[in-house]
Length: 218
Image (cartoon, rainbow, N blue to C red):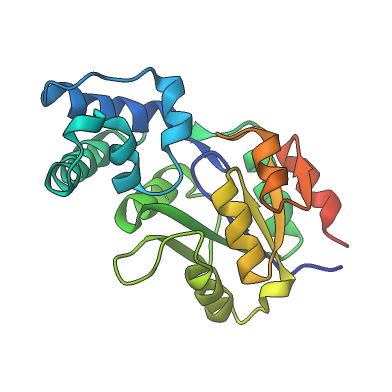
């Protein structure tokens, strides 16, 4: 099949952000006197939005709506100052994006990171490429795995969902792709294991970014 567009997850798919996210979250926890977590633990915390991240990161006996929302606000303030300290595109991502541009495919991004932070990351770390639509989590739209935002992107680009490849690194992404009627492609370099991707609908797993080109009929 000839695809016309690619919808990307951001964290764990295009950009390795775990260090900056983990560092910012740990600063929030430490400032409030709570235990911090090894950065490797954040691979399991990331993917469903910052509110869920702190629901997981706070001590179980301290988790309540007010504290979670306070930590979320403090995280956003900290992360917005430090989102690009260690974060960078994964190896091979620039070459893949250049190849997709050269073939004329439309590109878009959908993240569960808050919308302003998503746009900041893309502007700073992926400024060499044109993404037709960039959405993070918005209060008015259900977060992934709801297909609503993915379908909104398809509508904005005037491309049928069935003409999209959807590239992501978590079960949430694969479920979103399936629900939206897009072709789910899991990445082996991201935050979650390949087994999770396969169990949640990935039709194909790629080990290197450039392998995405093999799925696109010239």
